[in-house]
Image 1 (cartoon, rainbow, N blue to C red):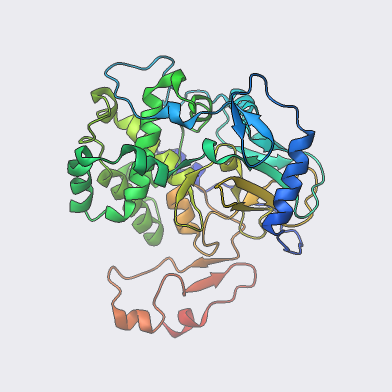
Image 2: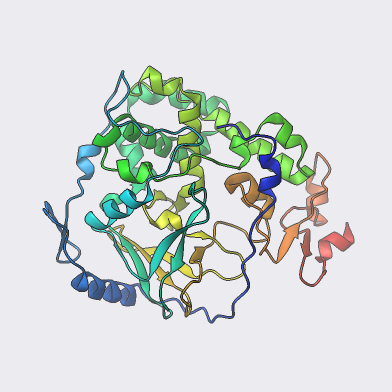
Length: 382
């Protein structure tokens, strides 16, 4: 899934979204649950219910226990094609989500082209502030804690030692979530998450997909962050994982795809867990205003609610990270955020010591504000 040289230019193109005035007043969790309960009562129940959903009087047929890790020595039945130009099956994913207990209202998935390279949520009707637009039950969510509990054993000691030897032990959460994605891939159509996995992107324009020539085309800070991201991919080796097949661990394209899925679509919850939320991962990034706020209840169920009154046709966006650091967003996610109000200084010496940081020579302090032309005090001092 290497990126071709002409794609470097494509990385620098992003449709900017016009700012909107808003009054951010997020709903309390009790109000969200009340709204969701009303939504549940108005939904048609899916056919052939198998499991009673305890938090609400609702039934769905998703069974997490059926997804436990197994080893495969041959290509799985209905294996997902992860090649760069493989089609994404969005419609089957939407049907799967709806039939397994997730509830949505007021938005649709819009594709910017026939190849579904960018698929994102757009409001289909006016949405008042505090509207619950998406609910996903805990059982459908892939998390680093569940993946670790399922896959970690004494047999994984060697693989973890390799991770620790390259000083990547702080990435173990991502590593086990990545392994979970690969385990489900090996099951093919027998995986409960097959339709969601088959809807995910194959083509990426971020640092992990770049060639060495691409890095040379980048400004210094972007190049530094991009190369760090690429090195991270190299550190998370699956070659010593005992329960994955040889076909999987030696498939560089597949392992890179699993890395991309975890690092571009998972988000950290308040309890420190990393979570992959089917359909909840289709909200694009916003820097000026974010239309969507997310939260989890005590049972781990996911809610996405509007943060202000949203007009029909408006993209539904959440925050992917520091809006003043578009270089990180470029390295991790592969887009240039033109709606960012400020950006870090792009010229840095190769080594910044503690004295220089004390003077303000830090990336997160040296800001240029694009709309006003102002600069932070740290920039003027340095």
